[in-house]
Image 1: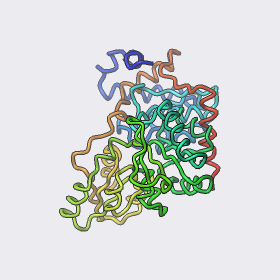
Image 2: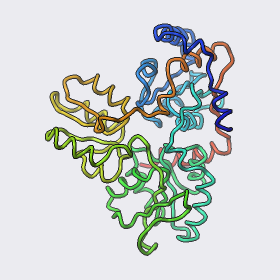
Image 3: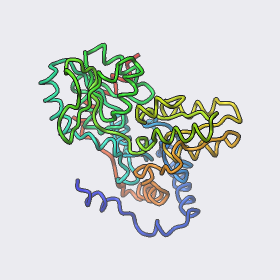
Image 4: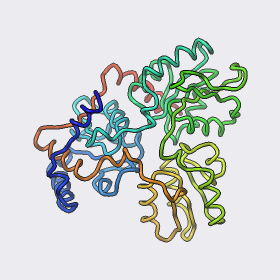
Length: 366
């Protein structure tokens, strides 16, 4: 589907853009009441407050997909997140359930940094170089096609919460691993497990080459050259500025940040880890958080007795996460009630079966 087709499919009637927030909120609230248990709205932590207020569950992408799968009463899963999250929900839910994304423009730049054609081409060259010694792992933040590729080749998915466990599992299977598509999570995880940085290579899918300074026999981890545009914007300078201005402030960041930023921070962990650490902290403590701005703002409101700032004071919210807004949510629910459902996410069955192999290997790894 071209970008023009995608935009055409996601243009909503102008009347929704002209409604006030109060009108839209009432419309969503009333639609939820009428649809009852037929409707389930999972909302990712990074969503706007105007949308997250209507979520039946909040969490990270995998948790929300699992909750969607467990909710067998729901005929309609209106996923307030981004495209790859809705794909994962479709893979894990039944054929009778419909997974819907309120705005098809809600994608993920990181997931888009590894397409299946690049991956198959890279795999061919890497296996010619290293033989049958590589196991692929993919971050949950990847397309269904990449998850299927990994599943087909004996690998598994990982989350930011279980990445260390899954990388350890991968090394029990093979001598080397290919980590897609986020180089920073892969590097930080492998480093925490004792893999030296000089044993990590980077695969550049644009130049189609392995970037490594040394004998290739030394390579243990091959990192796909991808990143999160939000988390890569937290810098060493940001850390130094906070240290200088607030000497007692704790710095906590997401492992999608660069190795240099993680190394200089006090703590690093998944979105849920960050939320839990702030929740468990003492009142009057101070924190600089390196993750998506919508979540940081929500944490600031939730804990007024703590001093909380963004690690980067000029950080913007994730642009694609912010695609889903009240007008799109209201339009989406109206469309369901009118029987003219738009933006259904359907993963090809063959792709879904292979992708589920990768997901199941992760879920079954102790």
